[in-house]
Image (tube, rainbow, N blue to C red; front, side, top):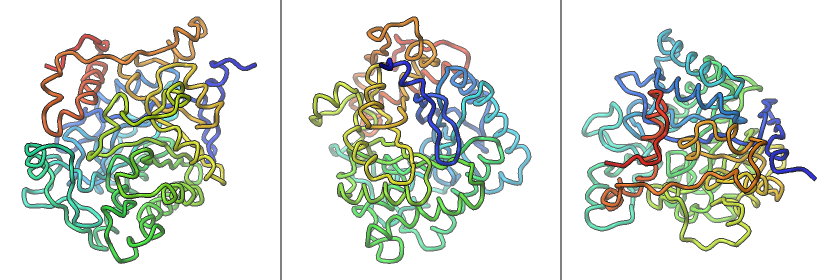
Length: 424
């Protein structure tokens, strides 16, 4: 009988031919380490990714790389500008980042993003009167009281409905971001179609109220992402990996039915996507920023420690062309991860926050043969000094992410993570 370590150590070959040497993937997190006017990759990112690359992960997926410098998800996001493809300084910075990530043999994927209506004021080069972009002029509806509504109006406002020209331009931005990743030596890209970002907004009938070729039916709402996939494949190579990060347990808050989401999975598989990363949450219902969910889940799901596995089991049945399913969220133990694989919930296991606490966690904990199963666990940390922060509008729901981002900042300057670190 295979042990949990044996199961997690088994390599996975993606349809493009990329071999992931084991099942544990470092999922994307917002590092917030880029700065300056260019927002290029820098020494801080290189340090973090070199350390993660040495941690024996099967694959690394970077944090947000925004494809439109006008609209960022946060002020520290890495950003790709259209002019960067012809900029030797930019290309050099990207190549150094790719080398740092993969020098130990760990394949690395770049997550490409556009926040759409979720770009906060001041994050990006857009002017004071420039509206965020979205498929339709539907603003955020964040849960909370009066102060939350005021903060929402000031930070995000009501977006502009994208014209067909806007759509063409943003598709090209995604494709050029993929070309830069390809030229730099990364193994692929992941399109961020989760957590309420722009691609998700196109997929959602609640937000996408268009009546043209990009809205009105499930097939039309898929057109935006399918164009990006098709044109990315043409601009790179058959061996270049293309993944997609999708919402799961929170899809109903976006107005998407069970049937439609599984139809999206089937369409992405048919389009030749190499892997789909199942996650969940939006800014309106930020399950992605919580350590646990109030939603009742069956006991077997609790045992396997994943927020979103019930959906992933359905998604795997919808896949017919070899697309690999990955689940990210909530994994903390060797046994839990191995059970998710053997039970058929996923083929790859994505982890994020444990990588902020123990950068080489696969090597030192989950794949460490000297640790018995009962000790191969990373416990969640109770954040100190953050009670008042948790009550702030908008910021409070992201307190966990902010604290873990502070740990990434420590790793970037050569310090060890500090589990006693206080928010303020």
